Amino acid sequence: METFTQITSQIIPLLVNNIDTDQIIPARYLKAIDKNSVAEGLFADWRYLPDGSPNPEFVLNNQLYTGAQILLAGNNFGSGSSREHAPWALTGCGIRCVISTGFADIFNNNALKNGLLPLTITETQFIQLLTKLQEDPFTKVTINLKDQTVLIDGEVEFSFEINAFAKKCLLSGIDQLDYILSFEEEIIQFEHQQV
Amino acid sequence: MKNSRSEPLTLLDKIWNEHVVVQESDAPAVLYIDLHLVHEVTSPQAFTGLRERGIKVRRPKRTCATMDHSTPTVNINQPQSLDAMARVQLQQLRDNCAEHGIKLHELGCETHGIVHVIAPEMGLVTPGMTIVCGDSHTATHGAFGCLAFGIGTSEVEHVLASQCLLQNKPKSYEVRVEGELPIGVSAKDIILALIARIGTEGGTGHVFEYTGSTIRALNMEERMTICNMSIEAGARAGLIAPDETTYAYLKERPNAKQGAAWKEQLARWSTYHSDQDAVYDQHVFIDVTQLQPMVTYGTNPGMGIFINELIPQPLQETNFEKQQTLQKALKYMDLDPDSSIEGHPIDVVFLGSCTNSRISDLRKAAQLLRGQKIAKGVRLKPGEYAISTSNRNFEGRQGKGGRTFLASPLTAAASALSGKITDPRKLMGG
Image 1 (cartoon, rainbow over the protein chains, first blue to last red):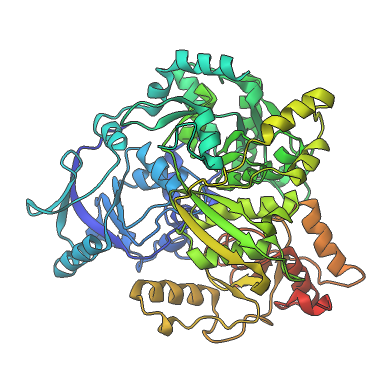
Image 2: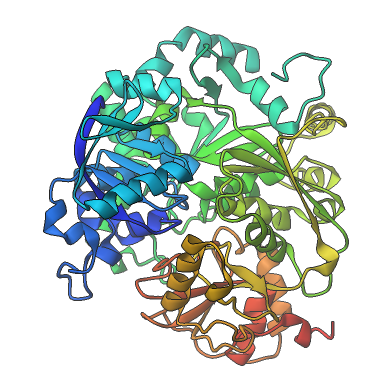
């Protein structure tokens, strides 16, 4: 897994609550049997017009955000279907961090396994970020995972919480399956007891 | 920690404790998984991962596969009607199952069907198990007193490889449902009412346990409908402690044990309930005697009202974000605030999905439809309205631009007769 230590980027605001995984990637893009070809489906129903051309109104199509790695979304991001295609599509389009006041559990788990940081902040911090973006929509923000801080112009805006194990895995790119398989003896023993 | 023997445990505690293989400090538990259900959409990349690591499926016998997502709902025996990508995906599952010795319930075979419908029907689901599937509606199986939840494809790979998952223990949430269900009101209305009450994120980080007299009076299929939609309130799983209703259902399954072996099993199953003084992290209470048929008006399952209520007015919402969310939903649905939802025309009626396509659901609908004539079925086109017994009314969920009202099989059937949203009680003399 790709490690996550620190990123500095503009923030793409997508201020809609309850963005479900059907919006992140509609079902018709789930027929792929690999991970790489799903990126074109990211927010497809919002991103493209009915004729297939890019929707100029949709924020991800704004060229001023080209290369941005951070998405700021409304509450309860990633609800609904368990499709891991959602984080694959996001990372496939260059997103490394989604900031929200809340994430659905399965999306949160899926994101962490793909080097995508689901950064949960408080409502106060959310408003603080929005205020900064109102002053300068293209301001660059730094997310430092090791220190658990969000910085603007080198100054700490606020710090954030993250589960210690998730942080360790992201920082050093630990593969969770390798971690599980390191307990193979315990698993065998468990299976013997279970019978 | 609720580990000591003297302390009362919740049902969640009991199943969890029995399945922890390893618990290191500062790490999630390594949790053993008893049954892994696999389908074509969320598994191909997981099998590819196994191949890249050069490892085989650890417990093929604890793994069960079916095809139920990229499959046709009509002309099931004509896979040529599918597009090329879907055909490749189905073939991939066949190949993966053959390579790893996994039983596949192939398209069109007798046991083929929606994964969350067929697994209980075949008797694979029994109390106290841990069950996962790369599908968020795995919560369905909690109706049998199992800890069952949806996982992503990386986790599908973890379970295929190790029969284990890394999980932080969720919190417990008691959903107490009391009272006798009024005529024309059913399990679907209970769960839609719960989601409307606590919101689509109300259960995040929690596992629901449904308790109370109303739940006890439900049959297994109704209990599955309720557990199925736990995820729509944000909870990864929903549990119902097993009882005589559960045992009667299991006794009729293929390969159910007999005699002493059955009794032994019963004794073990009967331990799967929350202890009397068990403490839940959260509670909610629902009195169903005041409940009416529910219909959703918006684009998430929490946007539900009684069928005779008016569509909410966004301007009355004081929270700005909620106001915007509501406005956006009503715009997508093209519905007017303060207007009546009952009587709204519909183009399509959908009776089905892993929430409400079981035989008892169809019987309920059929009883209401008996001797009556409905319009010929059509596919949902952009902008059209469907009343659906499914679980999600998200934008585009039933096809791009389609608009979905969620309701019970009874309400959907009543609406099918009139071509508009109809209160089933008016056709039931209730």
